[in-house]
Image 1 (tube, rainbow, N blue to C red):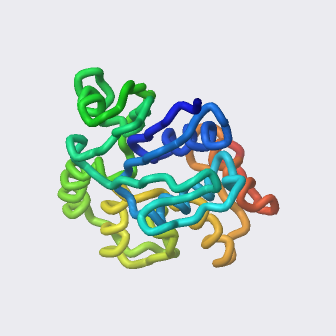
Image 2: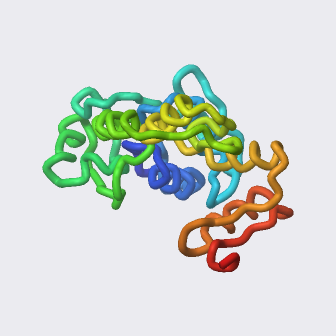
Length: 225
């Protein structure tokens, strides 16, 4: 009999677990909890900047999703005491918030038979970062940002902007919003960008750009200098 799985937190770790388990007959994913809009979650599952497109159709049925193995119950609850894990054999804790034995005990009280804590550095780019967003907002609002000389594409909405107020708002929103990396690169290419320069160590982002568009020219600051 398949192990009935629940996933708390559908960020990068939660989605990778989903991809790994969904086509394994030993597992049956029953329920997922995440605070993002279900349409955003479906898109992030479908298009992964590192692992590529999800190999299957993703249907949204009401507030639930179906990828071909039956409807998966989607919960969207911040308070863990309000979650329902009845019938769940193993609850995978992937939020980076309830990452201690004591904090995760609430899942057992809500019906899960067992809780497995997965290593998540933090609940970045999710509504769980709201307290930090408020502090970041106060700092950004006091910072001076001049009007940029060229359009700035921000990952929170994958759109170009040269408006200082809008850029500040997007920086603040990014802390709790999903990263639309693929859409951002595609939008830049559509706007005429052909060369992409990585301004940090390593070549990770160069590889991600090439996965999106094999014809894009990529380089790093090390090569330029």
